[in-house]
Length: 533
Image (cartoon, rainbow, N blue to C red):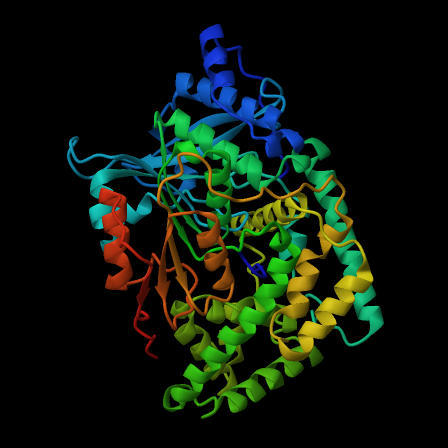
């Protein structure tokens, strides 16, 4: 799950797929067993539709080819397409194509255990770079890649998968934007107007039919169709950040289709948390991790010269914000751009030193370093399209997934209260999510995540000081997925734990994926190494 994002028209929908044989239809319809709850929510039609689409995909398979040159994926990575219905209640209606890619296992035929499918989060993130963990010879994944094909995909609406849009990409990235922290009621009203216009833009540029179906539940159904197209009877899955919620929903809708599942940096899946409360929780957690970074910067004052205490570093941050508000640095870096850049520090430990270095250079008189780091690149057409598309998908999924408050007084009250003690992200996060208050399509009821028949042991990995997905989310999913195992990185806070070097965690990930075995109880690991200047 992402916080504030740094700074094409929808492709034509494919025609409905040909009718499958009577045998395939019969097998597909017999597959789901809708519970009383799903029938009550009207989801039994989607369950049947998902089974039909999966059967159709299993029959068609994937026509793997060399990836298009402009996708940027080298051989032996291959790319292909999986066709899914826009609306699973109408599986023979409009279809879209999802982009997938893969690299085969590096071990022997006997060592192969199937495909490992990855989602990096968002909503709005592309997983297509996942096979490059093999081509770039990432040491963390050497053992697992011997046993598994690494498979990535663009979820519906993302990248190459019928991308949606809410705003002209150049308008989306242009800077400077208004200061997210309001001084007056007029500032708040201006932001409300922008949020309403953004929601209207999503409808205008993406269309009601598609926008209504941009949900996590549908992406989970897409994931099952991908599983079937890969020829896999059961899914092996690695999900990070929002990808953990996608995994939790998949595990609830298709418990008998899971073989191995790792969820890393976990969204709290409680229905009451999706998504308004989740974003308020982020504001609190980001403040805590921001202070962790300031403490580290102060500890390394000999390198950065930003102050020997947290309060001293914070004072320089507030001074920087005030300067940028009075006159945007380089004409393009205002307070909004500063938050977009500096939020990477509480997100990822790997950003601690680079962020501190840019800050230090600015204080020493090098303003260009800050402009280069924080200002959007208006000439980067492809990157700007990607940024706008990612934000559009984030908004569409979170706004459609759940019912959001429509009362401005509630938004104003909650965020004014939080901002007093947690000012780093609160208002910026509020404005980013405010389009959900005037969302133009029907908002859904989130899936009630729980253990279903056939769900195997799920591995949950979480750091205790994660800002984007607070620790409580892992605890909640652990309760809901009976028999799951929780691996805790105590005292750490980088978002995305399985991609870091920590033998206590890395060895358990390998063991689980290669053998299915876990510890007999939950495990607490010491943190990975603290960054060095």
